[in-house]
Length: 189
Image (cartoon, rainbow, N blue to C red; front, side):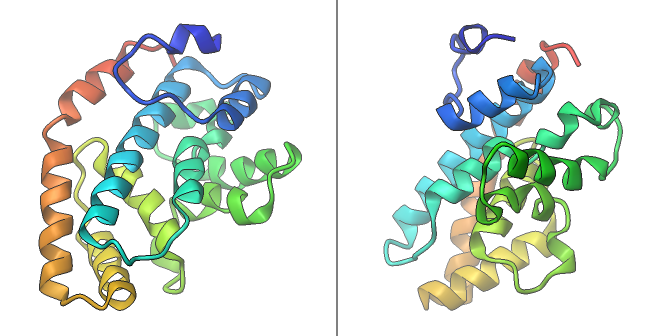
């Protein structure tokens, strides 16, 4: 799939660096479409969180890169494009390292699916995991609670306010989930 073939759509394009890597590893069209959608949702998630908590400090560019590449290992483990599996996580991390991406950004290939295993993950890690779930309107209470805890600790706002903001954002994002799922389905595995 050429980059031009993915430019005519309603979603934000992937960062050039991510697209370059995806082309280099021959990522299938369905995978690229999925990454576009998760990246697009991450963009909106970040914008809304920053608007609500302007003093919150985190690396937006890392979240966006992580959202744009988190499933890159599925370029090798294509069976996981249509069935559950976690082999793509380690392979994705390795692919990113092989492409010259540092561990601090390659880690999202590992952490997006194992956020529940490490209570010390950064806000960036759990935002990538959240975007990877909420793009299709999947609500994961344990993950949302973790995000709320990080927002509360880092913003020093009351927990109820962090909950309220996140819940509203996720409800708004869920409204477009059907169209995102339909768009992704137009691309071959």
